[in-house]
Image (cartoon, rainbow, N blue to C red; front, side, top):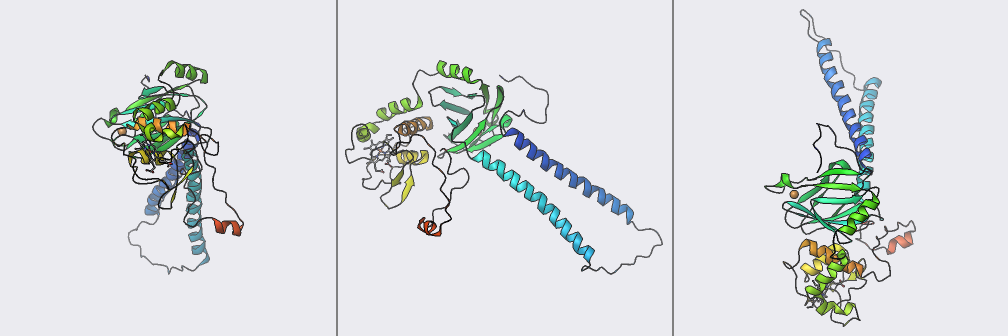
Length: 359
Ligand code: HEC
Ligand SMILES: [Cu+2]
């Protein structure tokens, strides 16, 4: 457990991004404080300086708003705030981009939020509740989803948080820089015991982490557990062809993950975790070209944890081009107008965090 600490203004800074977030925050506080004090001082000072004295006759001088000095004043008090807000914008967005895009070499851990607990699964098979063990100095990417309402996975010491949504996968990444224990909070009000939806991240040395991993489990890796589930749910009755060859009635799942799937209606989708989840729970919503829509829904039969395992299993079946578990490279921007012209209309560049990163 975390020992109780005396009151402190800031949580400990224990991740690679924490220093940047703090510096940015300090900058904004200082700028705001400076202008608040300046304005407060001027209000008082001018009230005193231009106060009405008894017997004094007020003469309003004609105001020439085209004078050079008036113009200069306007330019200065526009340019300074513009410059300051641009610094905040560029600085803020660069931190946002860094936080939104997990590095491709990140190790993956899966988080399922549920009223009112955090369930965590490691690729190697270890599972934990309200505890997250990670190695120090390694990029860690969390893939998160919720079994009920919206939660939010917040680790103040890492200065990182992201919403955890039902029916969707969101991600969050960090690199812990200090061995120790830190708080996990749910940062989205999620019902009666929201305040009790807390936990602890334990940052360990690489070797301690490996020992810890080895001690847990016994149920096999996530992909192995996913395979067991695959057989148990009878997916294999139709998709067994994946091991041998295609039987023609069901699509081959080998090499599916990360590939582009042609759909019956002519559209294309990328086979990422969300697509596989949708294929299993709402099989009618996207039909693979050349196949019939007789796959039954498995809605209600699979927990979100189980779904993550199934996805890991399908991912472990590899990709068609022989590249396993690799992030899609960013689309190459080409300056050649001839090449640019063939790029499909309506295909937007990925938003930060939605593409070009490991999913
Ligand atoms: C009754 C036979 C049947 C069963 C059982 C079945 N599927 Fe399917 N599955 C299909 C068919 C047919 C399609 C192609 C039509 C479509 O897209 O719905 C398909 C499509 C898919 C796709 C999309 C494949 C692609 O190439 O894009 C995935 C992923 C999938 N199934 C996974 C599963 C999983 C996981 C299970 C077990 C939980 C399962 N299926 C159980 C028949 C089945
Ligand atoms: Cu919650």
